[in-house]
Image (cartoon, rainbow, N blue to C red; front, side, top):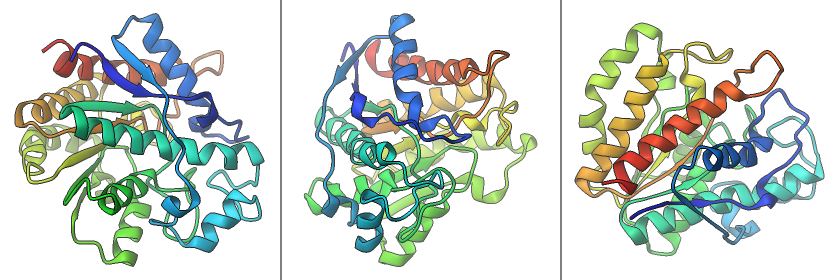
Amino acid sequence: MKVVPVFFRAEMVAEAGSYSPSAGKPPQVVADWQVHALPMDIRSFDPVDEATLALAHDAGYVRGVLACTLVNGFGNRRPDVAASLPYTNGAMLAAAREAIANRRVACAPVSGFHHACHGYADGFCTFNGLMVTALALKRDRQVNRVAILDLDHHWGNGTEDIIAKLGIDWIRHETPGGGHVERKDAEPYLARLDDLVRSFADCDVLLYQAGADAHIKDPLGGWMTSSQLEERDRIVFETTAKIGLPVAWNLAGGYQVDVNGGIAPVLEIHRRTMQACVNAFARG
């Protein structure tokens, strides 16, 4: 592998009218990776359909959000947000399928998944693309077991809700944000992260949320320094490469702004994540 497959389409982007930059972040992230000459192959993909979204969510909720009669994760009913959701979820599913096929890695530069519950939106998240992906892979007999490593700063409550509602026992879900992690917890967590990733070896794919909001300067997060975030990503990618566990990763949270109101600090964190991915897979 000489390049990292990245699943991006302009249709995944929306103007959400929200504090969270996630709906408009993908093109900025991809452009930043291109400017810094990170080796990647940008690929198109198909959006998921309503039935696929309903694998993880109440069917009435899915219909209501797509029809703009129910609020999305940003607390509004904007048609462009609704139109983008089949593409953000489709990108994650496409990345997982590609990682399984190439036995290494793929990326979906999207956010807005892990707070979305079975029947309602929450925390800037509308449909849970992690669970939609896992359930679609299972439906299509591409997997027996799936691991979800959610290293966004916050608890993946929506993922837990869907797993419980559907009685799923074949998904391993790790979300340290549920333990209200603090800065003192970072080094002990990193010390056991290699073993944790190795414990997923019986799974067919790892879905990895590389949240930028885990940075200590993030206004909505903060338990790892820049160097600790780099170490986090290095461990995840190098360990999955060593044990032959396919990994599909996405961006998740990140809310820092620069003096001009832009998201340069978030872009830098995502750039370092992609660099760690490249180092482990595209230059090995």
